[in-house]
Image (tube, rainbow, N blue to C red; front, side, top):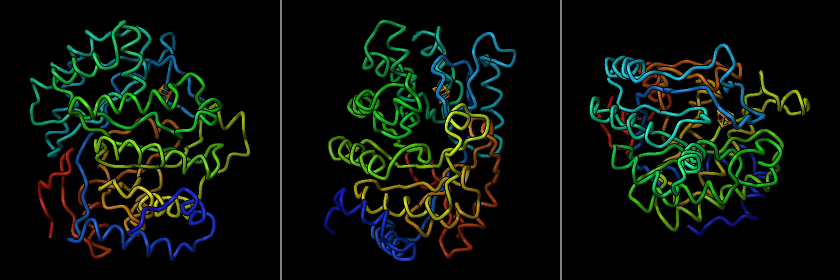
Length: 349
Ligand code: SF4
């Protein structure tokens, strides 16, 4: 199949019918996943701190050190959460902060080593590009040094968080203190080079134009051509409650299911070098999450035993493993539990 150009992607977003997009995305998904298996991972989101200096306008999660409800979890508290996850058969922790202003690389090395040694069967999918970049700066070492040293301690996978929209003109408005596009791409490129794998994400629904979304996809498709290091693409819509951005720009609207499914389908067509695309039921709700499987997604993401960031923005959807299995079977696909690397652990035929 010929590669979709940026102009063609824009035309599809603006002009194609929803039905046609679902049809095309399903053809593409079936070509990559002919066995009709839809995967999910049992994991837990652990936010080791909510202290953050970056102050993104779209974020309702962060606190400053002086705030009463700011926190840093102790290693023991983190361990307890991991043990609860293991009790339900979980295999992955999505492990992210806040970008704490003072914690240096040695603290993160101790933490990763402590987790990896005690819980060797649990994968740390942790530390976004912005955390990695800041750890490098405050520790006065390079990004590559941070990644190599954490890799040695047991970090093999980093999440795509912090990408938002990979267009500097959008980032300058919604997250002016965050790393720019080239830095986000550089962190992932170095991670891939040293043997780590990562995911790519996108948050839409603030001030971006369709052109910015396609620019975002172009950036990650090009890097994937170069390194092959992204395991999956995950996109979700901005959740506005309790955010500064919603106060500043009240005309920002909640994104419709139609918009989410259209963009998801075009992402499946454009990102032809991404094997896996996740549905984002956490932001869209379980039924749109299920529909997403008919618009290109082949993975229902995670059971999210604990979710704090989206919940802080007023959205609290929940799903356990049995509900996921039911939703997948409902549309005639075969559910399977996977690990972080998308290896199948158990099939529920
Ligand atoms: S999105 Fe992340 S980096 Fe931005 S303020 Fe929230 S916690 Fe900090």
